[in-house]
Image 1: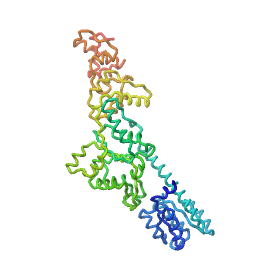
Image 2: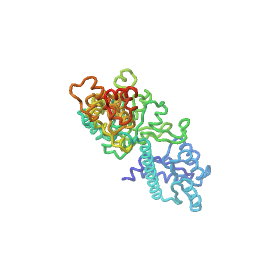
Image 3: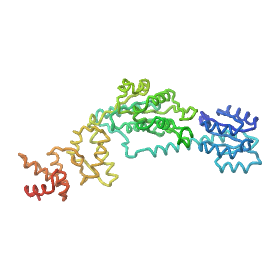
Image 4: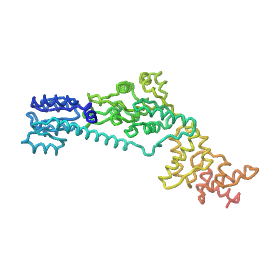
Length: 460
């Protein structure tokens, strides 16, 4: 069964000037499930290879127009990944060995044994698939941001509802999903979570940001390209649909696609096949999950004729709205603690939030959402004087009474303006022990003014 799957959608190019061998071998291979294109001339075959045809080549080593070694060399120049199997006579054994040294994958002696050739084709295809998988994995590792949050925290009601929606979306392996939400809410994190919860979690996850890419570059990144398809295309390249086969493909900022690119993407979605730029071969990516993400109102863009209505309805089949962080207040503190633990591991410290800092975070609107929270905490852990992160470290205002309590001081009864000032100075000095310059900066006064107030209140 596995061998039958290996022969599906594989183009084999057979090159031999002997008509009897071409006909008999073509007939046998086609009856075994392989797609064969048989040619007499290596010069004609080379032109076919340049057009992007072929996954495996079977070539005679002795031909009138061009010998097999030269043909092998020229094929590898066009497409280094195209595997070549050589046919040789007993008297040409040395040439066959030379062909292996120059990149041929295997060779056969005449008279040909068809079963031996079939076995070699399966072995070649297994090797190609293994190489493709290794490249996909390497691409994922190269593009994976190890600092990304691996999952959503869903302690708030809206967070819990979001988790349930992501779990349901993950249950369908070949779904087309639309994630919509403000910038910074974690659309890529949600996409990775969908992937990690699915049956295809061990398959590739690849992402592409469609914003800021020229149309020709975007199509090449999406669908890949053939060697020579445009200036600078010096080798064949797989696009993200090819890299993500069987797994999950994320298209972020899909709203930035041009109308022409949207049209081609719609056809790809409907047919679940694509062609590399400059290529003629249709490649299927059935069974692959497609996630489109946007921070814009696509329905409004459809009304303004900036986004295709048919594409919108096609990707809006499974639609998930990710609420902004300000609507998920119950997730703010757990997220903050997660980030602080992460930063602490990297910096060899154990950070924590004082209560006034937690309360200040809960009151903040977070226009930049989770990304802003993470950056705020990152900055605080770099510049904080102690491992106790205060609202001041976060650039936020804290309630006076909470700040004083966090500093370990007792609020006096009948607090007046003078007491307020004294308690603020004591709290700031405790936060920056022995560093009057930092204390003054935190209070927004000069060091000279701080010294005068220390003397005024008799603070030691």
